[in-house]
Amino acid sequence: MLSAFVALGTLVGFAFALALLFLPTLVAKSRNHSNTLSIFLINLFFGWTFIGWVICLVWACTRPAQPVLYAPVYPAVMAPSHPPAAANSAVTILPPSSPYRGAR
Image (cartoon, rainbow, N blue to C red):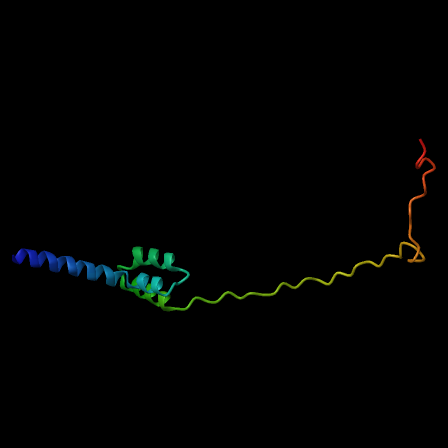
């Protein structure tokens, strides 16, 4: 009976230690941090050192910078001026009448 409590206590202690180790990753995931995967990987490889764990925790608690969106600025393009197609715009330009129209 005593060994069952020891095994259960060991399992609970191991789960608590693992949750404490990955606390920066959990914080980053809960805050929808844009670098959650990077924080997880650094926490996985360097989280067992206290300095790596603190760096990950500080990084997870920082707010990611909002992207700066600039409106595109296009250069002014001046269209070349064209002379009018006809001197008198009221005149319609029709093709010449065919002498063969209607002839059979």
